[in-house]
Image 1 (tube, rainbow, N blue to C red):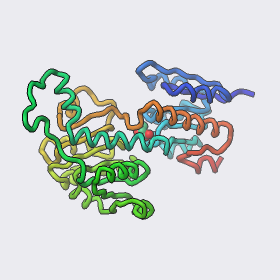
Image 2: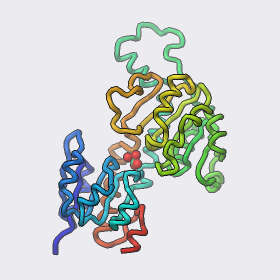
Image 3: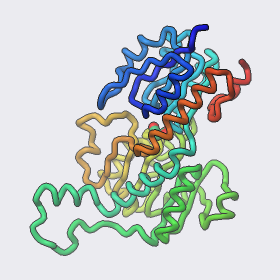
Length: 328
Ligand code: DGY
């Protein structure tokens, strides 16, 4: 019997490839410090049954039309806004993702970004390394206190909860806004549910952690930024499109807020002429929320397990469209 064929276009932990090779024919085309161009990826899909990808790859009609055998797409990410779920349903393609294994790592990065923006850590590092440190002048690179301040978490899911835990350790007051109130979390943690407007008007640090869905596109736009305090910071480690980037640039340029810490953008990678690259008050990271050696390995293994199960007709642990599986 023909072995199912799996395509892995980008670098993943070798253990995940080894696992898949036990049951499948694996086509693995990693590029050193680069990704496989989409055009090359699309050309290889003709007889592929399973795809293991990072969410940079749009799983849309164009891709699905070129992959007539495709049965499952396994995202190496918790977010799956790259999936066109209605097209996947039409073409009966199961989608899976990798929750839980990246929660604490992403929360570390979110809190690190908050600290970096507030205490101007990247600016200070660049200042020392560029030989500008000639005297300990008063108020050198003075930042903003974090301990004891108010954090407002927009999206109280797994990662939001993990960020809240870190914030409580810093003696912060934790406000949150979520589509539905999380009494389960309130029963165990000292966090306060508030309306989004109240959160924006009160918080010193607004941390965006909501998934990107039709309802959350530009959830933070001009009228939300206008409500924030002039010395507040916006931190985004979710998806770029949750924040209206043009509105954020305007808000920063006009002093509506003091700064931002960003790991994600409306278009990635950022173009070389992007205004953020010239703003000292914005800390810019290249979408590395879950990028530690340990966590990327755990994500790759979980993604491989999702894929392995689906191709062997066992229910995968983390499906995002179980109705497709059930309707098979
Ligand atoms: C995720 O898991 O969604 C991360 O953002 C990686 O893209």
